[in-house]
View 1 (cartoon, protein in one colour):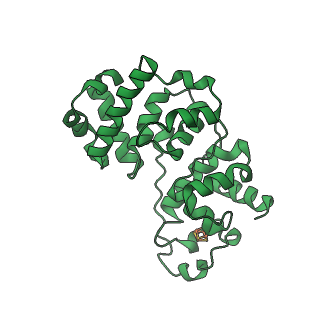
View 2: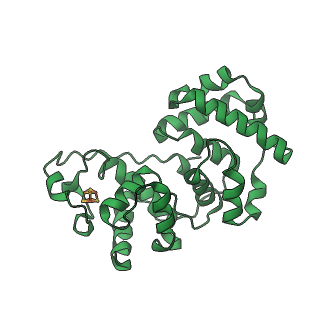
Length: 239
Ligand code: SF4
C-alpha cells in the first residue's frame, strides 16, 4: 500500500475517532503495566474498574504482593480470567521486588526499547503488546502496539498481509510514521469496536471505505446499516 494512502487513512481516522496526539501526562510505569495486564481479553471499561478496585483496596503494590490470591481475585473478578490474572500479577510483583529491591519500574525510562522488551518479557503473562503499551503510553516512545483489533483492520485494509499480531507489529514498524503511531493505534481500536468489527464489519458506515482492500466489503454493506455504536473509552488514556 502506498504511503499516501496510509497517510489518508490515518488522517480520516483522526477525524472520526478523535485521538490526535501522543503527548500525555507522565504515568507510573508499574500502574500502566498492571492496567494493561488487566485489560487482556476483556473490555477497557471492566479492566478500569478492576484497576481502580485494586488501587482503592490496597495502599500500594507492596500490599498486593503480600495479599492472598482470593483477596486480589475478589477485587479484579469483574474483568474476567481473575484466577490467572491474580496469580500472574502477584508472582510478577514478587519477582520484581526480588530483582529490583523495590516495586518500581521507573528505572526502565533510561533503557532503550529493546532493553525494555527484554526486561519485561521475562515475566509470565507479559507479551509484546503489553510491553509496547508501556513504551508508547508510559514513555511516549514511537511504538505502535498491535492487538487483535489493529491486526484485523490492517489486514482487511491491505496495509499488511500477516497471520498473527506479532507479525503485523514487525511489519508496521516502518510503515506508520513515528509521530502518528500512538494516536493511530488508539483510533484503530475505537474504529474496530464500533465499525470494523470482528464478525460483521459495518462497511456501509465506513469513512475509509474507498481506501479499503477488503474483498467482501460490498457484501458487508448490506448488514446493520446505521447501527454504529461508539465505544471510545481507552483505559490507557484514563490512568
Ligand atoms: S470497508 Fe469494511 S472492512 Fe474495510 S475498513 Fe471499512 S469497515 Fe473495515
